[in-house]
Amino acid sequence: MEVIFIKDLKNQGKKGQVKNVKDGYAENFLIKNGYAVKKTKENMAKLSHEKAKKAAEDAQNKKQAEEMKTKLAKEVLEFKVKTGAGDKVFGSISIKQIKDALQEKGYKIEKNMIDHDNSISSLGFHNVKINLYPDVEAIIKVHLIK
Image (cartoon, rainbow, N blue to C red):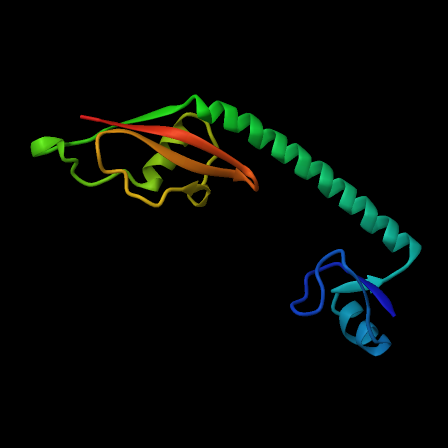
């Protein structure tokens, strides 16, 4: 029996996948537990409609991410830090501080979107990468001043 998976099931199938399985397995486990539905014309039409809807949403989200990328490219975040002898910075700027500064400026950025390996612990400009969407990355400048 051919079924359409409506939920991901580990080692069996992913959502939207059409797969041929044994009748008993399909009836007694997949369909009964809500992991799949029988492959019919109506269910195939629903599947194609959902795929088209998801593609449109993805295109819209990517467009919004591209717009945010152009706005973020113009931003410079300034942080006033305490320094010691030889302009050595005490501590460093954390990802949370960057996130909070961006949210104050009206951007909806989460900590896991900010990708920065090195600590920001010296005066001057630093580039920080922000992952807005798959294949859409923005670079902002962080400026440390005394």
